[in-house]
Amino acid sequence: METIFEYRVTKLEKEILASCSPHRRIIDKEDYLKYTDIDTINADLYRLFTLRDEVDCAETYVKKIKDTQSISSISFF
Image 1 (cartoon, helix red, strand yellow):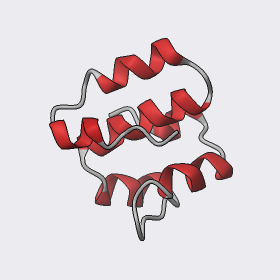
Image 2: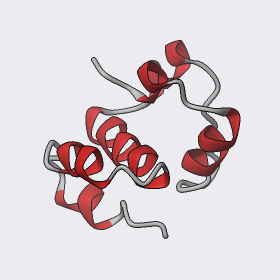
Image 3: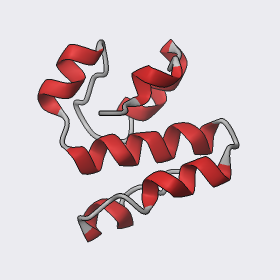
Image 4: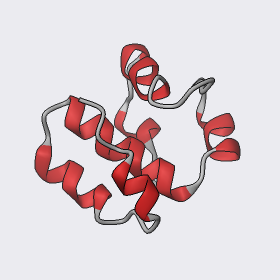
């Protein structure tokens, strides 16, 4: 499964992504996979590529989100 960790997410990017949800921390891939559902993983990938101004890539991941509530909550800029 693709995650933000396959794209060399930086410490700052992890902090920004974690700030999208209260009490959330992103430390390492193992814990991330243990506590993160697939829609949130795709939302994080969307956010990561949006942060990096890679809009086409970001759109790829937003299309993979199945939960409509997750889609409506991904905008954070």
